[in-house]
Image 1 (cartoon, rainbow, N blue to C red):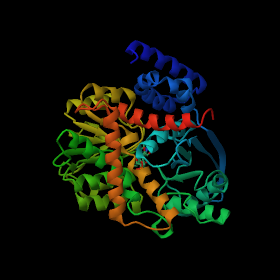
Image 2 (cartoon, rainbow, N blue to C red):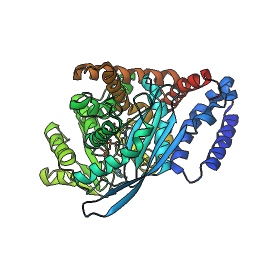
Image 3 (cartoon, rainbow, N blue to C red):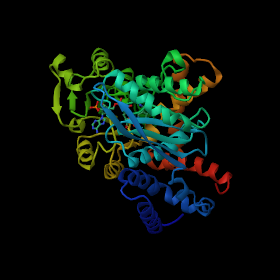
Image 4 (cartoon, protein in one colour):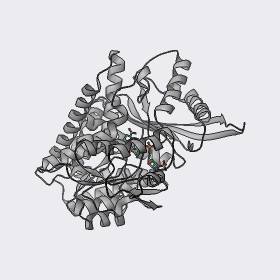
Length: 452
Ligand code: NDP
């Protein structure tokens, strides 16, 4: 086993090289640093991987496709956006990962997401490589027809780079069932081929039951596994959740199923804090605001006056047992982590991708908080997408109960892999466990192929 000084030096040298090769990509650097810190001792102990330069190869995408998306708005103005598809690694299966539409999307953001996706997909046990794509297009305030024109135009370029055995995109921030429908429709028209080339599809055209619930449900299943491992459960716990999109709303739903008490939700404008708890009826109201009317979370306090709206604030100051960050990257920094720890948080599970900064992660780990990193905790979404691909290939549809059971089994399997590589016992380091388990699977496949 390499000593800690030698490991530190190797990590520093590796990261210096990575920064030099990929300047001005802070999110990508952060995601790689988080992995390399925990994988390096394992890497140094497995000379066969080192000899094959697996880590260097794994941190370079197979390819990046960058293109222009031109469309016209409702006033007849011509608009042009940037778009990318980062096909990161297909060692263990066709590329798989979502598309994000948000003005903050850059190549760095998509490289971090694509890199994370490789390990997450490996953890599910399903044959899926890692990719991510998206555009700096801002869907907020756009009409349905504008969204359709944008999606059609984007797919007019993207279609030649994807395929059911090549690359299967899905949704992410700003890309839900509506956008997937428009993109699938255009793909089908261009290729004259009805295949499962996208996941997150509508139920009428090949979608899977439970897909929309899967990421939020899966995050709570993972948290439940973490607590069960130490003889505890979600039941009776106060839970703080950020975001109010797909992941956050279904995380609330599963917390309720398990007898926990969800206290908060948020969006980019601020947070709502309901000391009485968000129950099933209140959750239906939120789904109506966000999914149907595409409104703001602040509207919650118009209807439920005992709740507070914390304008411009994230919810981490609210006392809780469990925190589930489910909005976006770097939404939980060191100050927030300190506040959560001093308020007695026991468990943090990441529903969003990389919502915690690196120093926040270190703070949780240093204070014995059970910490479930995104690549393990939110893998339920892509796992269910994998199940959607299987159903499409078999040309059958499984019942909701069947898909949900498979999802629960997959989350349990991911938990076991984290325990195996995360030092074992009660004191599991889930960051280490998830990183090494994911790395090991991809590294073994890459080694089998020789120098490719
Ligand atoms: P949605 O678009 O459905 O919801 C995103 C939510 O996060 C909204 O409430 C949004 O608020 C909020 N948000 C977005 N950007 C910011 C920001 N910069 N600051 C504060 N709040 C913000 O996305 P999803 O729920 O699908 O995704 C949420 C996270 O989960 C992302 O990190 C995504 O990568 C990850 N994830 C999603 C999966 C899925 O299956 N959907 C699978 C695995 C991970 P507003 O409306 O104001 O923008």
